[in-house]
Length: 286
Image (cartoon, rainbow, N blue to C red):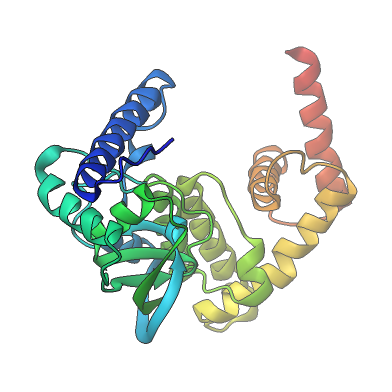
């Protein structure tokens, strides 16, 4: 609990000491819990944009934003942790000067941020955000530039999550699903997106051969989802074979088992029953 002395300079100095202590304790706690190394690291803006795919940007002007929505930085990620606590004493002088100004009620200029989805990344104002956190504030004024990306930012918490987004973006370039289909096809393991991309391209090649004409990626993606993916997922749901996987993971599993067991690319109830029977027999022999 923050206890003020009534002397702004001393209180600003104490604010910095407390913020540094919390950062050290948080890092120690993460180490004891064996948490990933990136749990307390800011998200690097350029890595996020690369993973999601840049489309465009537009200025939104001055807005009041939540402090807890600021999760990353354009170029100053080493001086502060994920919650904008100082990681060393090298920022102390400027930090305390801003804290003193805030305690005296002086005007603090707005920060500048990029917005991707609901996440914000600091362009300018790292020290101001750190001081605001230390003072217990929940919002801050910011000049906002919105960045539009090919893939949404939902689900990004740590740096490691960017791998999934990057592979998903590459998959959607190969298989340009839209609307409902784009939202439905979800995988947990980023490597599986490459395998699924190859699977869809092979399906599209067989379809082009059957129909005797070239089908572009957009047509293949749409027809694969409508004629292959949705009917198979419906059969899996009816047979109660999805389990705790995503429906896309269940689809990939049963597609691989189908070809391994029956050497066919067709789908019908007999195929589903054969895969289910094989799965049950494997369970009994384990």
